[in-house]
Image (cartoon, rainbow, N blue to C red; front, side, top):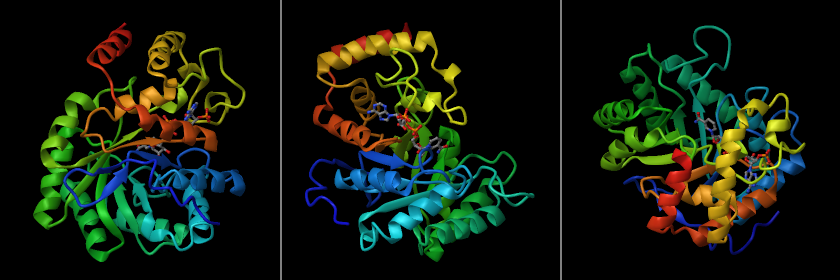
Length: 328
Ligand code: NDP
C-alpha cells in the first residue's frame, strides 16, 4: 500500500520541548477501536488515513484492548505489512504503569515491571524499539529513582529512544526530569489529560514543563467525543457512549455539559469550524502543548480533525467568550 505523496504538507510539526524531535500537532491514539474484535480493514483505514495526512505518531499502551495487549498486537501487524518500509517515518509510543498481569510485578512502577512490560510490548508489536516509552502513572510506593532508573536503562539499551511520563503532576514531572537528568537521560514529554472540560494542567503542569523544556502530549482533547457536535441531539447509536462496554458511560454525557457544548458550537460556527476542530485548536493554542492526541472511529473524523489546523488562531474576544461559556 502506498501513502499520499503530499502527506507532509497538511500537517504542522511541533518541536517536543527543547528536544531534537518534532511531533505532529495531531497524534492518533489506539486506546479505543483497536481492540480484539476490531476489524483489520477498519484499523488499516484509520492508521492509513492518519499517515496520509501527516500524522506520524501512533500512541499505544501495554493494556490497550480489550483484551489488554490487543491494540499492540493489531498495530504491530499493520506496521509489519501496510507500513512495511515506513518505520523511520513513524513515532510509536507505548506505556506501562497500570495493571497488566497477575502478581506483584505486573503493575505500577518497579524496574521489574517496566523492563518486562516493554519487552512484551516490543514482542507484540514486532518492533526492535519504540520511539517513546512512558511510565503511565505515578507509583505512590516505588521510589522515583527506581522508576526513572528503569526508563534510563531502557533508553540506554536502545529499546526506547526517548523517555516519557504520563499523568504526572507538575511537581512529579520536575522531580522526574531532575532524576533522569542526573542519570544522563532527558525527560522528553509528559502525556496528560487536557481539554476545554479538563483543565487541571494549566496551573499545575504547564508552568514547570515550559521551564524545563519538556513537551506535552494532550490526551482526550475531545473529551471522548463530548466536545464534538455528535451528542447535541442525544446519543447516536454508532457513538462511543452507546457502546455498553465502552470507556465512555452514557451517564457521562450530562445535559449541562451538552448545553455548554451547544453554546461553544455557535462560536465554532462563527469561526467556520466544527466543534471538534475548535476544541482541538483550543488545546493547541498554548505553545507548550506539543500535540493533541485524538482517537477516531472512522477516517472522516481524522480528516476533519487535521483540517482544523487551517484555522488555528483565536482572537482575544473569541477566547474570552469561550471562557465565559466554560465558567457558566
Ligand atoms: P478523544 O477525546 O479525541 O475522543 C475520540 C473519540 O471522539 C473518537 O473515537 C470518536 O468517537 C470521537 N471523535 C473524534 N473526532 C471526531 C469528530 N471530528 N467528530 C465527531 N466525533 C469525533 O480521545 P480518546 O478518548 O480516543 O483518547 C485519545 C488517546 O489518548 C487514546 O487513544 C490514548 O492514546 C490516549 N490516552 C491516554 C491516557 C493516559 O493515561 N495516558 C488515558 C486515555 C487516553 P466515536 O466512537 O463516538 O465516533
